[in-house]
Length: 238
Ligand code: URA
Image (cartoon, rainbow, N blue to C red; front, side, top):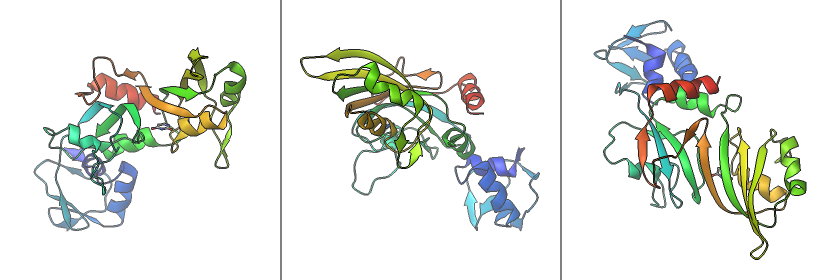
């Protein structure tokens, strides 16, 4: 038996908090009867409906995916480009990405059907550290990267302090490889931060997500997260 709001969140319909609102608004039925009690428990045999539509009680699944460049972080694309779920043909659960990586960014991306998990990790206040490696135009040095450790204004809002490491610089091509650790997840954040300090990004990869790495995976491959990894992520996202 599971709490009703958890079942709704696990089905990917809404976060647990949103599910609670759906319940108190009387939009959830169990076996045909509207239920407004938040503590209600249901089993796999119960028919749960949200706004008149039955939900399928899927087991929650969690995957770590090595997203290649040239793939959309979505489950469908109106321009018919490749989407991340194209790499999961054998997975029948309705998974979707937790947050996003740009079309031309590669690296670590989590996918799940657990709305509660996804919401928790994507919440701006609870985000875990992510390490990005960027090839940038320009010669990176302490002077141009230092402002990022204090936070800079992007779209009228200051970024949280970031950590950086200069992995290499190439005087001939005037390019550098820079590692940047941030915990926020604003749109194009790494590209915008590096551009703002005069180092436009040519290539970007997300190497880690919390303590998860891409070890053992090639672009386009995925693996399941184990319960220790799931709990550790949730703990880091507190
Ligand atoms: N920052 C970016 O600019 N792009 C990404 O895909 C992820 C973080």
